[in-house]
Length: 170
Image (tube, rainbow, N blue to C red; front, side, top):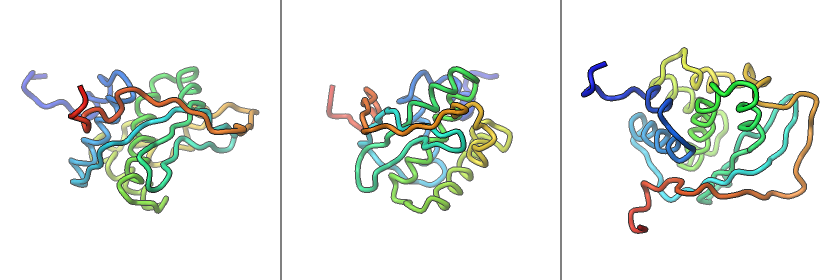
């Protein structure tokens, strides 16, 4: 590939080193496709529970500045199929970022997530396939035969998340 050619979204996702880098790609995806943005978000990671027939990947409490991701599916992916990790994180963060931009309707958010992902990654990319139907990935996302919910919500904040939006702190 010629070095002056712009990188594809797939290349950028493969090169992303951590959650903040993947989120920067999420923001770029939304700016490119929807011309929208939101600054000042935080990311919390916590144990939100597990159920063999479904799970909560993340949530955005309406009218806040935080996205909370479930550590359980991320750990499960790392154990079973690490290739899914970055596409999964991209998918979940994009979905919750769309909520943070004001779309609180779940069906609409899922549709928008799929449309953006398909436009930027193509129909055959893992992130697009997750956005289309994440249930096909359940064996890598949930612990079989285990169902539990946490007694309380405790999470840790991810350092330097959405750092590109904060220019006044050095």
